[in-house]
Image (cartoon, rainbow, N blue to C red; front, side, top):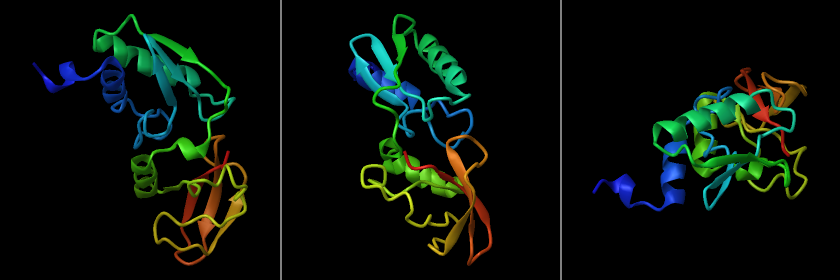
Length: 160
């Protein structure tokens, strides 16, 4: 019996979806970002990173396709906005992948503790000597920052 066949349904679904990249940030999966909330029986619950996220439909279609390829077409996908997604749901592995890709995730716990004004850590050199250039970055859930030490621009997930 293969290792994946021995996993519970929930674990099999999470393993499959750990290979489904976010369409706007392909270095991380929908599981890494915390978009995949829970598996309840044969229902998969997802929450987009941003209420008006333009990639929500693409994410759901990619998840559906991955489940169908794995012969899991009976799994229902439910999108919920409550509670809203928070950057605290990004896994540690996801945070590391984002930094390597050049995107700064907010500090763990920032959403709960109103640390929105804490300086962004430059994903390239690690400096905290950074500034926000624009509240709007490459996607609605990110803001554009610049490191004042290495002078490189980078996106930072908005803390929410």
